[in-house]
Image (cartoon, rainbow, N blue to C red; front, side, top):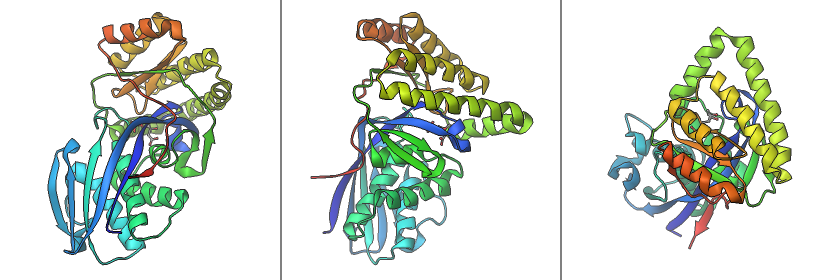
Length: 323
Ligand code: PMV
């Protein structure tokens, strides 16, 4: 085999962001919008990337230079993923990668992690390595850490395993939860959040107020444990209330921001069971839970607060080979 196409889903965090960077659990669901990556073995010893969604066209580097020198932002994850695979499973060939996304990299759906996972999975197939999901996770998570230095890896897990997961930092626990039909409403702020910057801001706050921030993480953890149970029972009322608790703690961490707050309050006032931000905060998306009779008014309220509704399927299949 010389060529394979693989796809992986984006993700939305349901509960537990930020605390999950510090050893606590979170809940994450894989969304229907996917990244598709084609990886081809070529004779010339060069790495070649086309990723039109992140404005990368015909990016080239000798295979011997992989991971060295500068790389444009949109190329980094794919390049380092190939470099990490190559150093673990040496091979002689050039690599041509093409990625295509069904969602904007601005949404915070985890496009970088999903494309990293696609590349590792594709190389595992092309070189018949038969890597397990955990082996794909470890190599993909290493790639993310090599580039970002920080991050819990939940987005990597969602891209690989799919479904809805109870996840602990670094993949210490990756548990699939049997949840169907999550009645989730998603609103996009139109603002791109820089995850690493926000994680660093929270880290600076924790340096100044270690005990207080530690207590917040512990509270978030206890909410995640309850939310896991309420989601498994399809108890949307309690799940919504727990979203509101979680949001209050994220506000305390200073990551809510006015735009998200407006959309979250609008959703609650329109009758949602609860609403919160999803991800690092300050931008990207918010999520809400609502009964079928309230869905339309909640969506309208979010739109009136200048958010954009994004229709998502949740709980979808993880990384897979495409025909
Ligand atoms: O901004 P996102 O969607 O990548 O989510 C970040 C979530 C954090 O908990 C703040 C960081 C992490 O790596 O878990």
